[in-house]
Amino acid sequence: MELQLATRAPRRLDEFSSIILLQSGPDVQSHASCGMPYFIGGEITDCSIMAVQTPKSLKERFNIDVQVYTRVKNIE
Image (cartoon, rainbow, N blue to C red; front, side, top):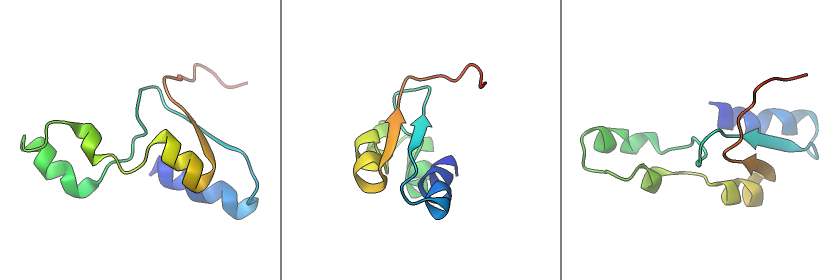
């Protein structure tokens, strides 16, 4: 859901807005939900093959700057 908001909401207000997505881990949390039963069932053991988007693909397709291994501690 967060990824959907990041790709659409700001662009509706200003198509040239700067969007930065912060991820505390190494990956963008965007996975093919149709693969979840296979992952849970153990048929798929590498979650990364279910990745729908990567930081690079989000930059190229949506012009979103994804910063991985970045944790927000506070907002001023």
